[in-house]
Image (cartoon, rainbow, N blue to C red; front, top):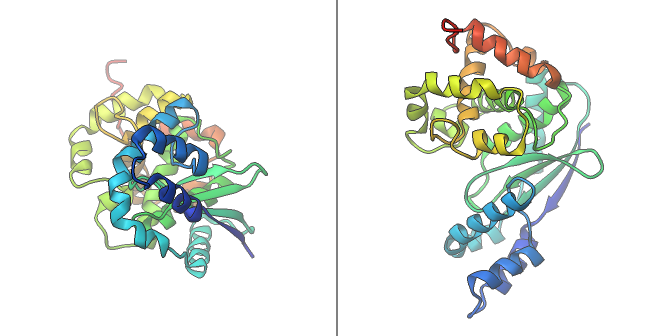
Length: 285
């Protein structure tokens, strides 16, 4: 039986929000209150992450007032969580029990759930609740949790771009399988028109990301996940993963087979897939 621990950060956010909503509190004081009383955001570690967190807070501040009553009422369905986790484990062929800490928090309406290692060596699944619960997001992030087990992934922010591609591609297609009937963009959590823009620059995106497959620096991971990649389009690694895993599934690979690729082999695996399916033009090499 899986062991799921729930950590609710919503009360901490509400405490911060109450203090920061007092008349006369300016942007700088609000930021200091955020760091003192809440200090949680879906951002990379370090100063760059804090800068992004501050921007998210500033951009979301007015919107919080419109959603605060819903935020106060947030409840998570633990039975539904267990059902989804069981489905993902079955699809990826993982039979052992999983110890999972579920953290639900108030983000900046960017809908950026994430998985991170805990201090005790376990796995934490962090889900934003300010926009309401999302079954697509739940399926996506639980795929990351189970995939970390099947691929012996270490769960750190700094992972290779190849690992990012495979992880996100698998998670987007698993969420489509478990929660069918939505637009493709919904499974990649992007706005209308994003997928069409990526498809229009498919060759440039694949060529641009190819040299970075083994790069695991925080700057590069940010560039291809939260930044604008090499073609000025957000989340290029998600598009490459969506395309590659979709192609592998169409060619007869199973979710379990894809999930069995070990983290240490992912760069070699992705490079070979790119070459085998002619995503990369090697005629001039």
